[in-house]
Length: 401
Image (cartoon, rainbow, N blue to C red; front, side, top):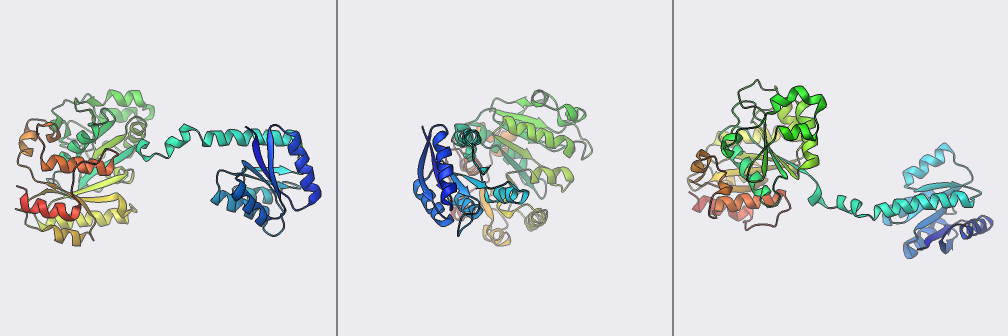
């Protein structure tokens, strides 16, 4: 297919010279001639050429300005600036304006053919499926941190079951990291003995690659691959940022979702985990005011650490009619930023004691539906039956046990 070219040049002799050069070039089609910058932009937007050859010193609107407009309004057009010489200032202006190329007069056939070949290759790549895939957010890895302001709010249980829900459609594309160096519960919840730990991996940090990390992952029948910080109590910080950062980088190359169960401690490691996340779940409950106020303090601390509010989701866990606080109080405290609620379920304790995530137990319950709904909010799974936050909180408080 012929390369479609628009020529914009105010000087008639220069315009004719460029036209003759284009005719001698490869398979090219001249769509028209513009005599000033405004006409060049108007014709380019109407005719959509593959390449627009724009004189740097077009009358009226200069070439760089026309180039800038086309780069914004018609990125599929390749604007090329043509000047008498290529000074440092002109070249910088061309780059800032979004030019795809720069030619000096007199334009010769070899110079033009080389540029056309380079621009055609760029355009073909821009239209390739590889580039299109980058525009699909469902193909981007997501890091989900689950934490809370204090222990006992159910964050580990939520992290484990959220990972199972995500893995239902993408087995072994979900990694679950237990970032607790002391008394982590994830292995117990899945009834597994870890193959290795991040503490064991730490001495190998300079040589880490996908194969080494895979050797420390424990594969579960649910499709969740588990990585733990330690199987015995170790000083906090034993697994540092120098280990966590490359591990996350490697996991993002091989997993669609990485769920992290993060301890309720503000520390270099936990802050790095949260700042590396696509979304942070702050888990709280309605049992007492101290949990709510501590959660608010953690929320404000994360905002002060320059984590945008839109990436911090408040999740109210174990909501029931027996709660001491009301959902309206929490909504007011967090300016309506509570994302969803998880109802209480008396069968949860038995599932934990058996080492089976409740998402893997028989039957359908409000708890399971709420976790699937939460998975659909952070992932790209088909949305399950779930209620809007404004109504789900009320129904959970009225009917959950």
